[in-house]
View (cartoon, rainbow over the protein chains, first blue to last red):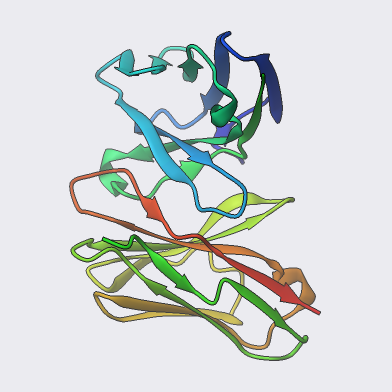
Length: 113
Length: 113
């Protein structure tokens, strides 16, 4: 049973437009969510996170939205840049097992110039 | 800080051989994680340590896999004997207690012929 799902394997957007990456989870115990970005031949790097006590967190061009009732979160990138082209992983963790994150399969974002 | 260091970056070996992957976490980090990434299974957690103690090894695929953390600055993941289906990219990550985000190394690409 995959507890964290990223249903879109890939997404292509034009430079300057908005990129929206989606993530769904099934475990209601998850209370902390993270997004990581991964370039080829590198390890994932932390991008932005959100606690379940919030419904939005913003950092520059990146905003994460959390809908607890729908068990859904999304990452918005505005405006998208070619350097944002990477694989984006959604991850979730619980307070009782802090630090252990369950990862989705990732979404490959391509931003076209 | 140099970040999480993994060695070797690439390993090619023959079926039946012993493989040892190495990781040096970021100094001061309390938790260390070993992940495996494949096309079929995505990014899966194999084992993680808190303060050098293994906490959860439920992701270790079978007895051929073992991991140790003899001190706070070094960990190994050993596969003995290796099989072609072990071919994957293996990531090590570390985390500072009280923070959820993990810092990943560049990975070791393992090919078992």
